[in-house]
Image (cartoon, rainbow, N blue to C red; front, side, top):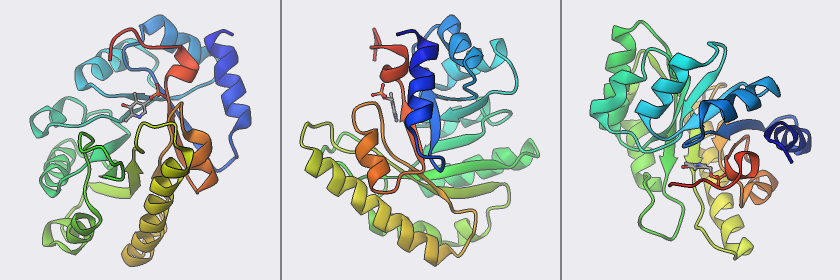
Length: 221
Ligand SMILES: *Cc1c(COP(=O)(O)O)cnc(C)c1O
């Protein structure tokens, strides 16, 4: 199947409340362009420099999402154009994003990344750290950053019961947090990748990040 056939097959299999982020990291411009021509407008990248190069080269109606781990000192390169930052996992980073967004007079949407996997290599806040963020004075004084929801990555395993448990945990935390923050636009739950998006949707994902099922296997990480 071609990229555009895969995009269309996945798009038509998703429930209407689930948004597809096409993960184009490591893919050449031509591949992104093919997905764009098939109607895809939301792309996810995990390196700021690569995302910025693609943003410069490709049509400006693309929504760029940063899905990878973000270092504070690199935020400035994406603030002029980034639409949604999925991997925010510290208050310090949130404050830095807000400072730069104010400087650029932009409103930037972010998700807080929660650690739900068993592996300790994956980034993210614990449940307790999440509550601390919302209770902090820094959170209350954000002016140009809108926390739209949560993001998480399940353990990389064939054990679908475990994957579902981890996603269910994140969904429960999302529902509780949504009640706590009392914001109607706290409405994005980003979970599910090529190998596990069916499980994620079954437990309430509203945004899936899919790379290899669209573009094929990546040659480099
Ligand atoms: C690479 C990546 C994806 C997409 O992974 P696939 O297995 O290729 O679908 C999703 N989310 C994050 C955070 C990633 O880094």
